[in-house]
Length: 92
Image 1 (spheres, rainbow, N blue to C red):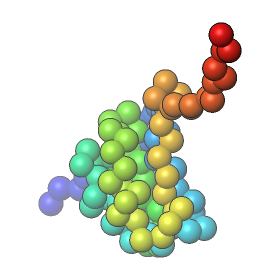
Image 2 (cartoon, rainbow, N blue to C red):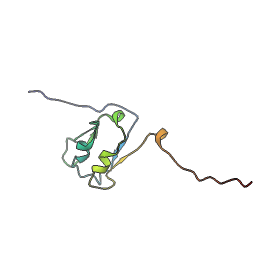
Image 3 (cartoon, rainbow, N blue to C red):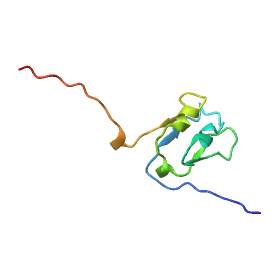
C-alpha cells in the first residue's frame, strides 16, 4: 500500500485566494482546475489547498465553478492587470 503526501511549493505568487467565511469546502474548484493546482483540504468543509501556484493559468474555471459567489477569486500578476484611464482630447 502506497501513501502519497504533498507539500505546497513556495512561491511569491498567490493567484487563488479563498474567503474562508464563504467557502463551503465542496471542492468543485478542485475538479474544475485544468492544471491540478488545487487539492482538497484535509479538514472537511475547509477550502482547498493551493499546491502549485506558479502553474495557475488564470483561466477562471475554479471561480466559475464555485457555487458561493466571492468564496474564491483570482489575483492576476501586476503585469497582467490593466487599468484604463480616461484621457482628454487636445483642442486644436
